[in-house]
Length: 454
Image (cartoon, rainbow, N blue to C red; front, side, top):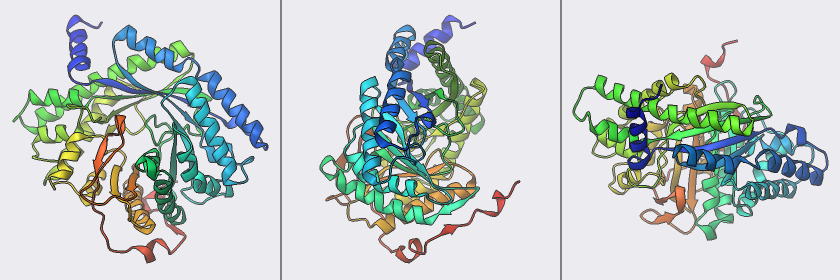
């Protein structure tokens, strides 16, 4: 039984500590929409999404009112579009037409983002995969709510360096296509290694081919709750620190479990996973960086940062696993620069660099996330950054990703404003030495020795 103390405790988390359910994401398989005619494909896709998701937003709002729990986003993920459009889309323009259909469907049902304009190319690219990838700059410039992700490697397959090189070019081209909007297109584009099938968080969400026809995934977040809990044990030893994080993560995940169960029952769609990720927002008191400071760092980036983040990530996962039988996605702690005021402050103070962020990604969820870089950064350098981060994921058997924004016309020391949950970011310096000959070799970096487990 839930007692009055737990009710009051949860209310305090919501009202004072920024506890929220970050997203309810409806995953929809579009495999049964595949058609050789692009117009018929688009009609089928639009009809399936608008039928299955018609009550998603209203259901989320009902649950918010019933329990008083903020549900910040209602989203959709779909089967990777390169698979869905493979038979019908013979040109880049055909894929852009599909992207516009997805955007239209997202607007019709009222979700804020739709993820899955994606291709899985960890070992090689089909003709459709390459067409979709080359269509990304235009597709993200003519749509508002469509998000794109490309998986370029895995522990099992190695790294597809042809895809890595191409994505370096596409990130830069996407920035060019959306330069009038502060290169916002790049904020909706993520490059993965070891992408999970069941990620409810944008921009990397897609509905995996191993998933059911439709599924409800919930992403829950509470950096402010964890920070407040740690304030009460300031100066205590690591055992007390870890227990506090673990217990807090458990409570936060239980809130997500409640919402997921309710949404599943109301929509008549099976529940998939809970993703407990300490995902910051620009709001004061909703910062992963502030947790690291509470653990004992002057700023993220100080010596000890990677160890503190490793501790945080592990305890969050341990607490979440105890609270739900179906914890999945990317659970842990996100470190997106533009979305976390504490991270922005650390960059401005000179404490945090891209190189230190890369080291931190060895022990956290996702990777180099929402980092603004100079607009004159070359495509080869961006490809090199993607390759480095992907190699960390491949070797360590974990998900890593890159979401960098080359801001056309701006350089180090300037700031770019994205607005909303995406926040703002200082332009960070990038190593200026060339990796051109490396990324232009072509082919694949083989899978690591520990991938051979069959």
